[in-house]
Length: 257
Image 1 (spheres, helix red, strand yellow):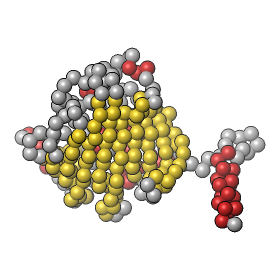
Image 2 (cartoon, one colour; image 1 turned 45 degrees about the vertical axis):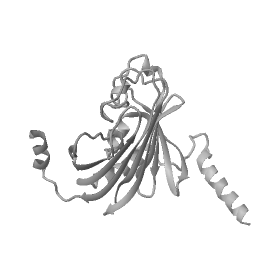
Image 3 (cartoon, helix red, strand yellow; image 1 turned 90 degrees about the vertical axis):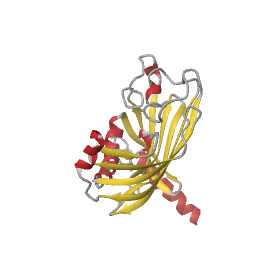
Image 4 (tube, one colour; image 1 turned 60 degrees about the vertical axis):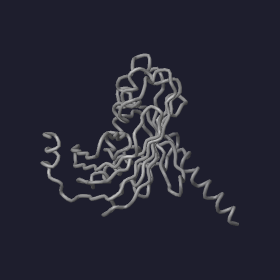
């Protein structure tokens, strides 16, 4: 009996997905990409400012950096301040950022499916990554012949981006996975973010500036051209202080030091 009920449920869902109304386009139970962006933006806009302590661990042959503790402050729309001892590199792709900025880097983005991922119901979105986006802004015309796509997994329970994948043709070059915690007033912020990157045969010309190391991961140890690049960056976040009213002058002092 239970098997019959499950089968009936599946058939009902499929009928919603593929049903035709006298020649009209198919009806989908999936939300639109714009609707998902609206929910992500509402969550992001609840954050006026925050402080967080970040522990950064980098494992890659192209950069040697011991585990570092970083104090990080942020205030809307784009004020930031960092304090640490000695050299430290923070990957921009692993930090909390505006969902609008993320979607602006994509074209032809759509919801391609839904699934349960690590106990959470997620919407799966996919779009074409613009060659002039942050990661690929310096690529040559020859390099842009490669198909650049990004796949996003959005948890529907709290509208958080829990996983993203960047693909170059059929090769996955970057994977970012985040685990979130509830801070206050339905504000969810990362507890841990793990960034895995892998590229065989060296990076395309120009891409090394942002993906390879110099902007995101610090100074490289050697030339990346023609070499296999791989590694893992782990960010652990703790001691959040959210919406405590950080003054703009706090960030201005950083600029004048």
